[in-house]
Length: 462
Image (cartoon, rainbow, N blue to C red; front, side, top):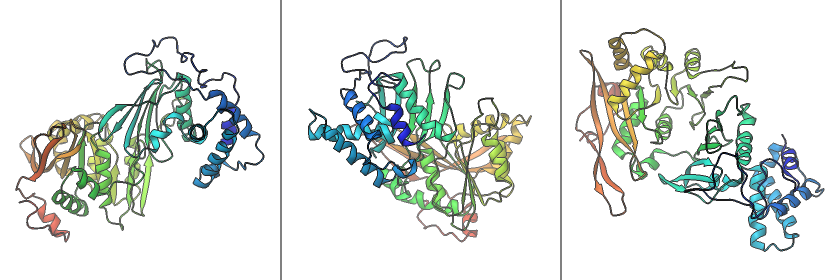
């Protein structure tokens, strides 16, 4: 739908699905949700009628050149639209210059943005947006959760937001398919779920995409790792070691994977595979693959496992998988063991040893009746290095372990920690004090680094 038609669909002062209620009236309810409770707020739009009139005037405005949707999304067209909205609002009685600017921004967000949450999407300090229900919107800022003053007047408004996100991607959300994964035009990852699965109303979670991808110096500045660790990891990637980033939800695994991927030389062909494209590789020779959900008839699904198998036929120098969580783990390990060195991926796990157990479980999900010892041998020969990452209680993210996989002893995979994060108490503000240190042990694969022409500083493992 063009921008003009979207505006036309929302115009008018009559009650339409997704319209806020008149000032002072209660927010529409699905019939099941109780009155606002803890953490919920009541929202009514005092500018509803004004915005309706201005929308109608803008549709019939001969002075404004609408153009095509893609053109209107340019910065020049956005600015032209905002100025025209403010000019029309200035003709409305009773609005101060400050209100004209405020309502103009609100209308612009509703027409070409994402409504009430656009201000959160534009805030560089906000890393995640969580719409628990129309009247309860949280954000993550600097690792901490905050309840915002942003909200929606009805369930319908949230569903309209979801549809605005997923429709251009050819995806849908309805009672037959009440969950959906998608992404915003800037790459931010979106998950949405609606009733009857979401009891309090439609829920949306948005993991924001950094407009300027973090560099390794940013992670050093944040304290995620130190300079020695960064130099060591860069050498490991260039020497084509297979690396797995492990950690819990929100620990920063994808950011770290992106940093590791940035160390891959420019002259290599990289194939990335993700559920929702998040990686921001700067190299020129990158092929990005993304999974596809089933269509309305339940057909046409393309899984991570299918894409991993296909990637092997694409002559990759490196395979980077956003996350392995099922049977594709077996295919990934086999690729690592059959000439595709330097592969990178992430896994949900709470520690290096726990990550190995998760890999065993996920290999069994491939449907192959393999002995546990055979799986462990596959893992031990395929994986060279584990990076364990965590989000600490103060909201900071740290790489807590860099651990070498040394091989098998009997039926057990041998691990050796190379770098660790050691906590050293709390500040008065609740910030966790600590530092990264080397364990003083040189990895067994050090000769591979030297064979690749990479020389590490003498004190790197001191």
